[in-house]
Amino acid sequence: MAVVVMKFGGTSVANLDRIRNVAAHVRREVEAGNKVAVVVSAMSGVTNQLVGWVREASLLHDAREYDAVVATGEQVTAGLLAIVLQSMGLKARSWQGWQVPVITSDAHGSARILDIPADGITARVNSGEVAVITGFQGVEPASNRIATLGRGGSDTSAVALAIALKADVCDIYTDVDGVYTTDPRIVPKARRLPKVSYEEMLEMASLGSKVLQTRSVELAMVHKMKVRVLSSFVPPDAMQPVTAGQLENIGTIVCDEDEIVEQQVVSGIAFAKDEAKVTLLKVEDKPGVAARIFGPLADANINVDMIVQNVAPDGKSTDMTFTVQATELPRALEVLKQAKAHIGYFDVAASADVVKVSVIGVGMRSHAGVAAKMFKALAEKGINITAISTSEIKISVLIDAAYAELAVRTLHTLYGMDAA
Image (tube, rainbow, N blue to C red; front, top):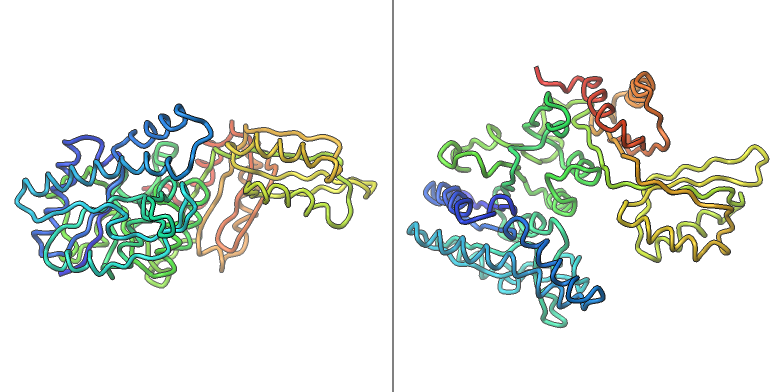
């Protein structure tokens, strides 16, 4: 007998037929004797509609009321799934985030989970009841109001609940059957990874992979919670329950690096199209100039990623290039405009026609020449690099958007990841 948390995303619960399919997956685990809690997202497209209504009502709106509206999508899904499970003869009950309770910070719209006192849910699950819980939301105790966790927050809800329940595994069901070496739509020869380390998955999630939400991976890594990525579109009777010990035969397991026997030098290629490049021209080259540039951006909660500084031959001025999220580009330019006198630059140039391509792998720690091979291969394809950033297990380059697919395919082949 195992304790299993199952999370189903929006495409998995998009309509009643798919909710019935989800219920069949849940029944498989229950009939195997497992104790089950389920975390659900809103039906596909529902959250976007709710957000649209809020913005149509008023562009400047109370974040607490925003949360009250957008949290209703998950409530509908949880209730419908509980009803379907009950119709199958299973004990089931839906729970909203505030009923669990999932205690959050007061940052409405992007709250963080602080605690989950899980005694009540644990007792229900131990009694054989399937607890169907709304993802993406909790309660902010100071005002006793619903708070949502931001996009992808249901993944974080599921991992946090799994930790609170001391679950054996947190299964994340989505529309893909695991984590691939890169997007199979770009590279048909991409392979599903049977296992990937927390560190690699964290880099992939933050660098453009949409399979798991970054905060959910961070949480799983800190608490060593084993996470498995599965497809809800695989027929329920074609999959083994967790108690059958078949974890590694399907999907992708996100786990500790020590659990992966055959470690690849490069495990995956990620790319992010939502990047924008900003260049400040002829900035005075003296101590403190970087702080004057990035301080106002930080105050405006604009995250800066890659940074490149080029010093002019006369040594008196410099060009400073950096990247921000494409959606943040207008705000970033406005912040820089307002701070122009303080910063002291001649002009600013910006472009959203760029892509960040990254190679990721824990094996890079012990292998030299990974970056050199990457730069040489891109140069041979005529792809110019405008910025570079590195960490211990990844190398990211900024290139023109027109070369994105060519770069991904080239690097995927270069590091031997094409499927046989």
